[in-house]
Image 1 (cartoon, rainbow, N blue to C red):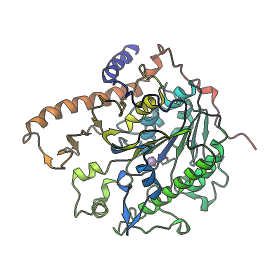
Image 2: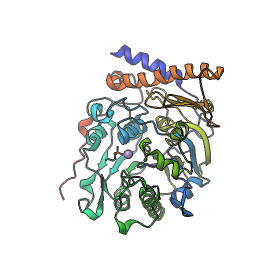
Image 3: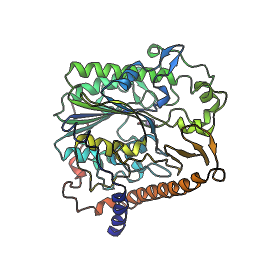
Image 4: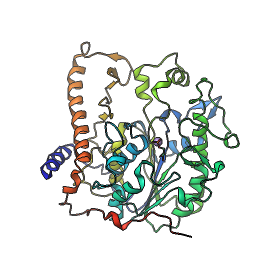
Length: 432
Ligand code: GP9
Ligand code: MN
């Protein structure tokens, strides 16, 4: 009911942070590339196997002086995996405690998503993914998000050829090459989301595409991970080379994020070996949930930023850089660049990470030292844990209320945003 939305908006308004005046609006009007790195974890950055960098292109990008690179950034997905990452990235709304919010609510809900917001500010918006359009209910959900275009499998020639395909869709080198040909035709400024897929469980790759040594953990759904990650890195490098030639590099913002973990907690002996430890603790497993979040733009003051954050924070952070007012938006993340940003990172299962302590799999740790602590042994932890858990529970329950109650349909008082007309979009590939 409308009163439910009012309550949620009061909670959200209480979390609103002042913008960072040094960064606010510095990237206004630029094209935006949103590059979704499938199953890509932060530990791969600067990681080496037999002395070779797994991802030299991403490493160079990560350390570039014009790239803001967050190294304490966590995935916050639940069972919705990629679709939860997309729900957070496009709306700053969490996925659900079980199932996929995009599948269950994507078709009928009203959203105030990034594509619609940018479209209403003169952007052309397009999503690209080599899988079938219906996977994760994207075709219907993207109409609710307000994407002008959605280039899915039917738009990519030869996508059905086995040698072009791996697991969920087109191989990333072909996918990114073909997508670049489409997106360079888009009227500018555009917002283009590119969703990769080759670096996906169980990390198989045909031998002619492998040119990197597998790890030797003996776990056959882990040892290919660095090989498909290396392939993704090569595909990313080729894309950037092409975009520089096409004149689309300097006038664009590049946002890169890893959507969720690649190696699950069920592979602890292998994880221990990858991390050079004899066994992993819940602290190690918590750190293993980190994914990259990088923002690059010519002229952007870059550097490695140790701020603790998560996928829910991507949208408010990007809106700050684009100089798009977000006062009336119902977002559960916060601008990581804000001087008042606290760095409390809720996880979908109710655990949490903060710069001082974390709670993971029902154990508490000192975030910086990794030392396990207990509520009994550490008095200031007791107080902090109570406050943090209360905040985390409120954030998750308010976000769930917005999704399960479709509360944004009552948000009619938006002077600078009008609801999307879903019927105005048709993503079917026109014949010929
Ligand atoms: C499916 C692809 C992978 O189209 O995005 O999804 P995931 O299995 O990572 O959720
Ligand atoms: Mn994924």
